[in-house]
Amino acid sequence: MAPATVKYYSCCCSHVRDYCQRNALQEFSYKDAASFTAEQLKLAENGKFGKIYALIMRKAAYYVADCFETGTLEWKRNRYTITELPENYQQILGSFEESISGKLAEGSVYNIIHEIRKFLKYLEKAGCLTIQDLSADILRAYVIQEAPKHMGNYVNLTWPLKKFLAYVKKSGVALSGTFDFLLANPAPVHERVLPAFDDDETKAILESIDTSTKQGRRDYAVVMLALDTGLRWSDIAKMQLSDILWEKREIRVKQEKTDTPLTLPLTLRAGTAVADYILEARPKCSSPYVFLRLRKPYSSMLSSASPTKDLMGRYFKKNGIEHHFGDGKTFHGLRRTMGTNLVRNGTPLEEVSQILGHRDINSSRHYISLHDEMLAECCMDISMFATEKEGLQ
Image (cartoon, rainbow, N blue to C red; front, side, top):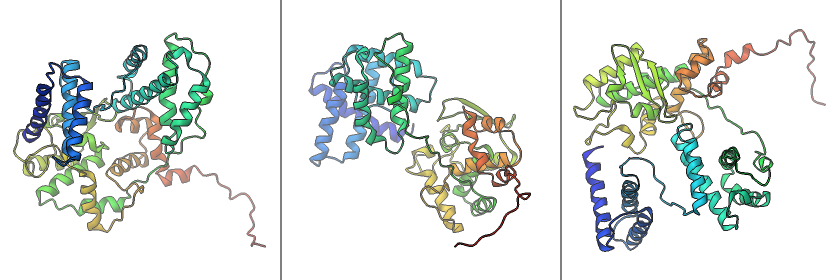
């Protein structure tokens, strides 16, 4: 963490310390963090400081509460509104969270537990004080209440409930009935396949990067790494110098999205671009990250507001490439381009899945649909059938 960030959060924590002294607190709980946050937001409303600063103090307060709760300080995503539950519901929620942790990505676990916490709070308000008392009518009422909040993706509502009720049943708890019919999705989820960059667009982007500048050397290395390895932006931005094994020509990273390790070959052109950036353009500092901001503090590029949007936008503008929301022309499009090129070159789908770090091979099947020539080979020849051209009557 950059020294400036440490200093900033130290200042925020001093407000927490003052709050504890005013209220004679020897310990600082999540409930105290909520009260502290309410006080700071009120001060922000009265113009004492900005709301953004109040929200940053909230983040610091919950880190302090985490430290009192667990005994350790971990830099992670926090829940700022911890809903109090009856003890029996809190116990089953805790054991459920333990059962899915490590099997799903951290973000997925967070979202599931958030949804189930809301569900259990609803049960309490509905007078259903034990999970055994859950009825079809109560579940139906909850789904009807929450469905409008999930119009974009109904499965975000049904999937956590299915997993939770399946866990409850597997734990030996006798439920009053079967609820699968209430959690069935009304239609299959429609997955839109976004396009990849074609060869001309990829060439134009690379040629427009001015590698005589420090920014150009960095951007060229980042884009080349994405094109040759298929790494996600989050994995490239968090890549450390120790993750590159130059003698073995390999990159070893722990994927941010799936929390699983991945080893990839470092191609000659990507390796050359990265080495050129490190030796000629990377700021001389003690940061362990490979790709850094251009100005002090030399922190990871993740600390920028919209790094990939800025990076791609620079070279789209130079080449007259138009980008519209939902057209797939984003930094992640470089990953799709790499996957599509692998399929085009005849790489088996199982190998494509391993290179891209997919847990499920079905995630890699999208790249087949991006390869028009391969799809054309699957078409049935109908030349043997007699056809006639008829005009409209």
